Image (cartoon, helix red, strand yellow):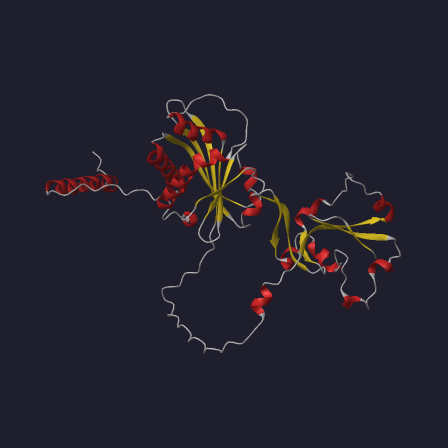
Amino acid sequence: MTQADPGNQAPGVLRRMLQTRAQVRLGQGGAPQLPASPPPTPSRAAATAIGRAADRLYQLPVRTLSVQPGALTLAELPELLPELPLVVVLQGPGDLLGAVALCPQAVAALVEWQALGRVTSRGLERRRPTRSDALLCSDFINAMLAELTSEMKGVDGFEGVAGYHFLTHLDDPRPLSLMLEDRPLRSLSFHLAMGAPDMREGHILLALPQPTAQARPRPDAPPTVEPLPPAAIPARISLADAMQDAPVAVTGILCRKRVSLAELRGFLDGRLMSLPRACLTQATLETQDGQILATGKFGEAEGCHAIRLRDPALAGTDDGTASMLGQGVAMMGAHDPGDLSQPDPFRAQGMALDDVGLAMGTDLTVLRG
């Protein structure tokens, strides 16, 4: 007869001791100990938030098939949008802007539930979402953002979801890259089954800017002493405020291109002129004297031409704008009087060429060398 190993009996002894302690606790009127809840995850919190928003707002059955949290850049955002999406710009704390995109199936489910009280399985015509669709989905978007604010508390990486609400609807998603700030984005991609018994499978993409990390004081750090306020300086009469209201005419420049005089004479209405491929990302904002104020990316916003501005010192190192800044070529026929004593780079080459400035909203202006 072999002797039992005490090490193998240890787990069983501990289990019986814990069971005995639990029975004694129940016999004394105490409540049983509940298992510790798992820590919240972005997927679980987001699924709970969107289901609760649909139930509290419309009693709409929504089953979350999957939620994929992620991080992306502004350049990657247009590639992740669903086909023919309903794109909504979100207003956040301060001047922060975010975006949410709903696929046509998700939009149809929300509209049908509000209009018919049920979700059908009929086919959808291929069309772009309208402003009426955006208004019918605005309450659901705001409710989803409010539930995400409460559910995402304590979730690492999603502290900046609070304070966003519906701002406006975009007919075309292309201006989205100009409206949002070029900074890292946090994303949540929802795959949902909406409605019962007929269900539509929809996709919703939420993208919000990641807030900048703030330095936290160390517990052992000494307390900071606030400096004394400086002594009051008597006010001086200045023309600075009046000069701020002085009008300044600025012009957006896509690019500058040299053409021969023969080509210039051949310019007619309707003739196409080829431009460099990189001119959209190298647009400049200049004064009438040719001073470059800023560089940016050319695009469209709310039906108008627009330039998203960048710092010329930073932009010149990565998109080729530095070469344009170093030319010092004046635009719209205005030359700097201070460079009269310097040699003319165009005459030095001995070529009969003209400098043509392409400006938005203006005709071609020839600068004679």
